Image (tube, rainbow, N blue to C red; front, side, top):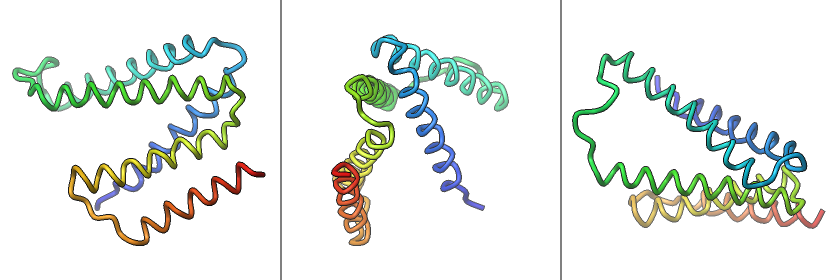
Length: 146
């Protein structure tokens, strides 16, 4: 059974947890320090996940060969996540509401992912997806206007 959608939901719950906790500590920590601590937490979890995966597969912790291009692309992706977290911290420092910041952040991520998926990965954008993005941003505009 393919259960990718359950993993995506759990991933979304992780992002929601980050959003709420990041907003909660907003007034108690400097934005740059909060982003750094978040990155350290992400690193620790990622290192443990990597080690468990390698050990359970009975593979060496350091691979024999590391393909350069995919590794560099992962570094770029990591930088993108780091910048996203930095700007998230700054948005909260500027007084952004967790609910609105999260909606804008995720709405932009969805839109950019659809476009890049179409342009670089030859994925189809279905009319209902375009309609969903339009409705999502219309909803965001209504939410912001309050």
